[in-house]
Length: 206
Image (cartoon, rainbow, N blue to C red; front, side):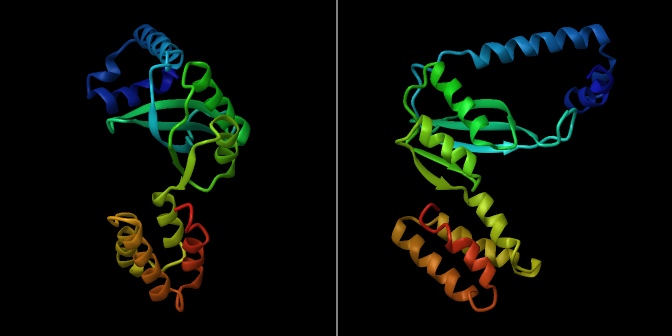
């Protein structure tokens, strides 16, 4: 809102930011809204994405409902370049909200889904993905999974556990990854069974 803009603009633009008048701020907002509308309606028919990274981002500012969030999709084209692909108001991270976003991408020309999608354990996205881009393979996000596993470990063990988990997803091939996975299970299972259970239950999709 205009009343909160001075502090935000100072953070973005420096000390001269708050000097913008209310009318200038209104014009900027109109420009940004127009740019967002044009971006959302851009033609995607020539695009081919090999990876999606997806997540629901929750904000506290200016929300009518506490359960509102922004659904975000980052895509990687075949050259490895990452692009912001989707941005959508969602109710929590429901299947319906994700499906609306994916269908919007398809409507604007993205006929083929990615080879692989990476996200957390929220079921809404994966159900929606099967409905819209059924051929896409799924992979659980290691950032989310690492945080989940660490929740079951004392803080003093976090640095070492992070390194062991990194050895899995940074492995050069699947054989080495399986070996590092087995090491974590055997080294931590007796003392921290919940941490091992949290990791092991998603082994295949990780």
